[in-house]
Amino acid sequence: MPKVTCGCGARLTAPDRLAGRLVRCPKCAGPVFVPAVEPEIDLLPEPASSPVAPEEPSPRIPALRRPVPAPAPPVPAWKLYGRWALGLALLPLVLSVFSKNDAKERFEKMIESDPKLAAQITQLEGRKDAKEEDMFALFPDHRITGAFVARDSKIHWLFALASATAFWGFLLLIYPMGNASHQALWGVGLFTGTVGILLLLGLQLAAGFSQGITLTGHSIVVILFYIIKFIGFSYRAALDPENGFLLSMLGFTFGVGFCEEVCKLLPLLWHYKRTAKLDLSGAVVWGLASGVGFGVSEGITYSTDHYNGVSTGGIYVVRFVSCVALHAIWNGFSAVLLWRWQAELDAIERWWDWFIPLFKIAGVSMVLHALYDTSLKKENETLALLTAAVSFAAFFWLYERMKKDEPALTGVRPA
Image 1 (cartoon, rainbow, N blue to C red):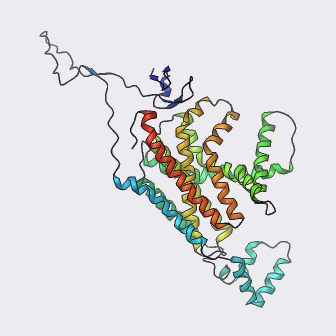
Image 2 (spheres, rainbow, N blue to C red; image 1 turned 90 degrees about the horizontal axis):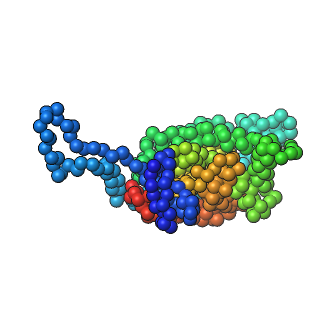
Image 3 (spheres, rainbow, N blue to C red; image 1 turned 120 degrees about the vertical axis):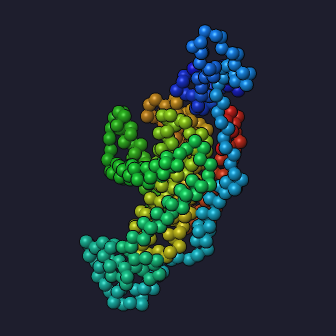
């Protein structure tokens, strides 16, 4: 079994299953890296069948030695600086702050210039079975004047494919992969963009359904029900236009922020609870890829429900570039903290033990996510842009700091 000495002086013996992982010292609770123990290899030649005694081994060939792991390949300088290019994804958001896109104003001008269309809309609004799609069917080309595409357009799927390809290509080419594989990177993003989103939608439906129900008792089912009910209340508090900034932000933090940030962390939580073999660089690219998958999937939903037939072309660039990057770096920030505090997961045995580690790992991303969404809801685009800039700066700062601390924590030079 691997033996290790903590910085506090405690000498520890760890089980083989913890080899290669960061664990907590039982004495000082600090992080301790458990090295992988390689079996000793006998490099002596096989004894000859001849009765003549074999010659002494050459001094250049040690009789017994442990294989020395190959040093991590040096990272090219262009990659070291190229990572920061992810910040360029904020440019569309910056430009959108200084551009005007008032769909309501364009809609009013459209019906003012066409009295016949205005009469048709008034007649449609009087029908109880009228749907939003019925109104768009009345518009010329099925869109409000100035909208980029028609309501029933599918072009956002092409935008989603281009966004996913560009971001994942950037990660594969620019970001140090550590011990993560290219195949795993695609798998993580696809999982979060499909299964993860479906789990999130299921939780949102359950949270909304729970609002009109009351249960009594102290069983696990009842406790879980009221946790889901609280999440549903948080969503309602976030979206209620009558609520002030603080109450809306609290709602976004414990509703949207908590659910979405944990959803993006699912692949990493699963990995570190089971095997925990990813190094810092590997954890970061997993986190970024998962955030990209979530952001692209969300962009498809927003385009279908809100943008098509209504918005100008700039919003698609913001959604599939800036917003995808924001989801990636929020999850990248949490991934760094998860790598740093991976030992916290070892002590989790019951379902309620998850809450403190989750808030510790994802708490900062939840708050930044909530502040960004609340700022947009209150139409304070400048504060939203400032929050996005702080989010990027926080991720770059934390990642660089942990890269400097990684050798001291693990004894391995990070890639």
